[in-house]
Length: 372
Image (cartoon, rainbow, N blue to C red; front, side, top):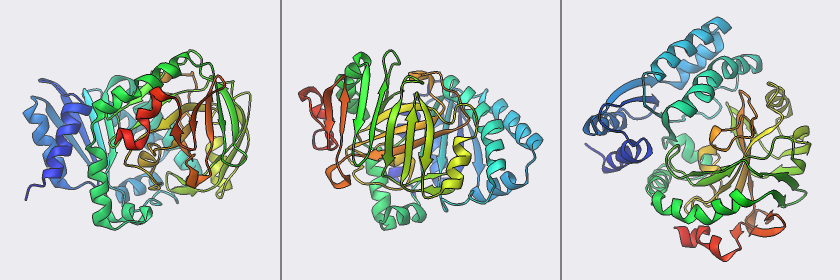
């Protein structure tokens, strides 16, 4: 039986996110997503006059390959996938997570090789700048459990969060985008010991409104690479390639992470020492999705949390580029709502957001009761 939610989501991905046109090719990568949804994507792609290519993957198979592959094997896989990617005008990837810790025993060195020889060349160096792409999770019982929700409630939440008016969101972001374009210095204060200052002068910004993620809802820039000073305590749990981290605390000096602690200190050190760029920041963003109001323990949701901000350790995107290059791009979230301890964000000493709520009149439209 055809699920109307599948059809609507497929239409959004094909016609809005990818904006497919006649004669284009779309590569659809499914990692455990329902076959029925892949079929819905194929139908919508063909209806738009595009050619769909399909890659069906499974986390258990990918884990075994990751554990067994030599460096030569990893490079061969990257070459093959890059060859196909270069045939595509658009790329849709859907991951249905059954176990967030599936890759935790791959090994630090091996995971580093996969990031360096596969993720970086295929996705960071080529896909991000040459292909229309969109990534999303698929709701599963495992994700619902991590979010502390029933499977039915989580599915309903997921489809509703994907189906908001992203064009309206883009319009609502314009005043904040203008302020980011004109700001020089940013200061993030609280909760707790968090006090971090940096410059975004001349970096640019990007409104994430359903083109690259569903659900979406963030606006990002990047700190000037060597400008970050202070300390920050991230209060939202983070998972990175199977490893879970709580209470990540970073001290920054002249842009570099000079001290770091977390619940998983060994893994954290391994990530930060991955390459020359992995101790620098590549992104700073505000989350504004009106329906994402508490952590889900999945970064594609948590980085859009209303009242949050996040920084990415490592690679910077070309759409708001500070020049930092790394095989790592790891988003870490700070929630500043009153329930999470509060906090402020300043642009050039002007208060922009307090306790998770935008203060200036022209930015109030981004507060969840107005944007929802």
